[in-house]
Length: 526
Image (cartoon, rainbow, N blue to C red):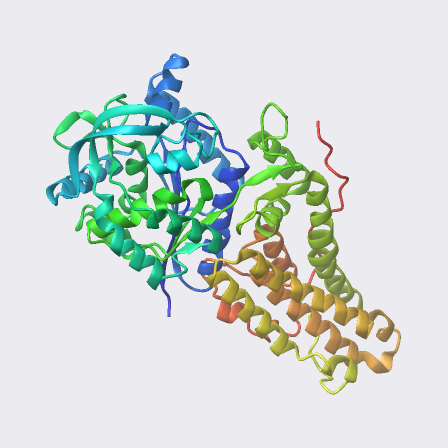
């Protein structure tokens, strides 16, 4: 039965240009969204840009621009990136959208009316780069430096509106006890739980030191804190503040989100503040938060001064040389999905492309279709000769079903690299089968014609199913493979149960030789 699925990226701050970190998070979500659509589910995949705050206001002033103009300019850069990678997001939200602004004020007003937001005074440590207040105990642990930028924390005193985060201590502890997978991976969960046990402090939800933001309801001297504004995007995109609205009617059923996918540096906001606000609003909590680690480059932390920053021009150059599938595959199989940072290495990128795309998927699709064209005039042969030892030792319906089950289980855990391995492992099984059965030798003996048909028919069918499982990771190559096998597939509508079932290739179907991924020289650094 079809389910409603929702996955989100964080919305990206427009004070920065797109780079590998932004692209990675969005590609993870895109692969999951494609897999869920392939599984027959209705998916809402959300991304967008975070456009308010003092940093945008200051950057615009430094450039002699209005904040809105700077937000428009940089938001367009993120849209351009989504188009470059042909990502399948269903919405690109901006925090300057009137719908978002209106709904944020409705949510905040509701929290004020319930007493969960109040006016108070704050004096303490402030991380200006992260726009985050830090408790005294936490600041001491950090040696009074930002855990992200390393810059000194600043002492500030402000009159702000506060959210009563402290009131949700017990409920949050119960949430983490009842749902051990709410925050993933486990290392990130343990970090958050450790901080929660130190005791929660109320958090500011407004500022008075800048004007570029959403005014507090009933008090325009205060601007809603950019992080509170940003977190609400997950709900405003679905119209959750306006039950009965057109947006809510069309999208409200997608809440709660299955998964918020973020970088580890913004985990506290998503794992503690966001669920507490949802509790205060009597809204269901998301299924989980997955906080991946960081990319480094060539063994070092990325830095523009070191020249190892993987920015959008670098990414575009890489895609121009290797293709979009190669970029996706490297990110999805070699990236920092778990607790450890991942190293973006040009040599490793080239090796991974050659080993997995050229020599495995590409070569297997090429040799199976080429032999079909050569020995059977490009028509899918009937899969006879079950009894031959060389064929019967592999139970292909079971092998493909097992790979599909592993793929489904991995996708459900958001273990995308394991899902990719299940798919590419099926291709390796076909290669091993070809090496064992040697169809090119069998073809020399006319009396073994049925045996040859049995071998190639099974190879073609297994490659077709492997292409299906590879689709979320290699959308271009899988589509090209389907077409070469004479299959008209629309992964938006054709479901996995049908596409991954053994016997989908009809004997007599026309097949064309296919070359999926060309061999290329390594891309040299400039």
